[in-house]
Length: 90
Image (cartoon, rainbow, N blue to C red; front, side, top):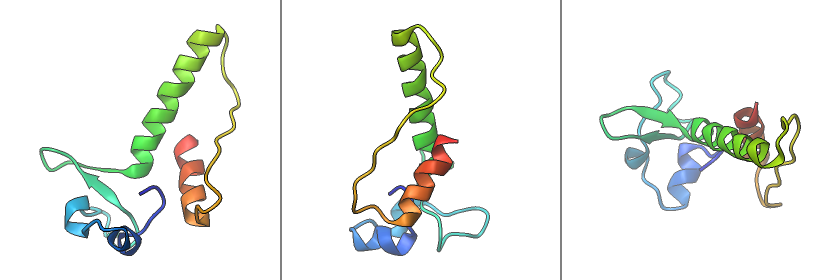
């Protein structure tokens, strides 16, 4: 779902009603996940938390700070998906 629009999510079989809505009014542009209790979170926010956790694990393993990393993506990813990953990694 990273970097996909609602229309693209629908094309892969997910219904927009299953994904929640963007409170800022960008429902047609952003895919957001609906959490229990009605809270929504963007896919990019989930990825950002995962990247931070991976950095912490790597730092513990290496015993030194991690200042740079390379994130590989599939060749079929769109420019929007790549930008979303870059945004999440910031």
